[in-house]
Image 1 (spheres, one colour):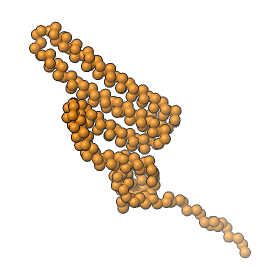
Image 2 (cartoon, rainbow, N blue to C red):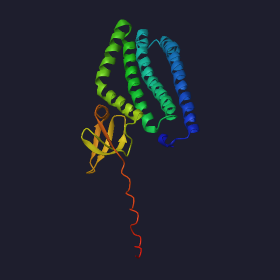
Image 3 (cartoon, rainbow, N blue to C red):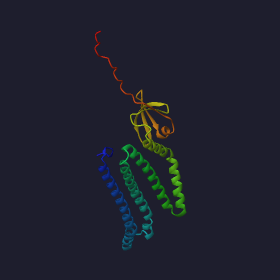
Image 4 (tube, rainbow, N blue to C red):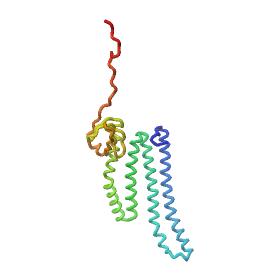
Length: 232
């Protein structure tokens, strides 16, 4: 079943429990695999190499690969842990908000989490003060590179939370008038009167006046119409 079709509170709580279990499992597996690799795997490989004298690779060459293995493990399990965390966040939000709002929040958490993961790993690789400087520099670069996208995502999040308009509302914003068809994390889609679709960035929508037109109701038939005239 698609996640947007799950609306029962009991089903959502089951998804929260499953997501939490996966998150804990990813963390435990990461700790176990890291311990095996760092405490047993390389020592085992070095012991095998010592027993095979015809291998000319030095002892230092095997241990030199250890940081690269740790980086790969951190990237793989870090991504899984981020996915597990944002899944927990998503299903907890679904208890209060609809799928669109929760999915938008999930996208923001994913963007921030991946940026933080890359910066943290880069800083750990460099090590020491240089690692802190490198991690901070990469964080700044990622922040500037994703500033516009993140700004649109945050604006879309505020639009979904504050709800100045909803899907199928008739609005006018930035000179584009039409019916709201979809509100995503980054864009708002409006179908205009000529059936063209205006795709407006959410930060533009959030920073401009929004005109919300009243919904048109079908006109009521006038009383007396269709009735037979009374004879004088």
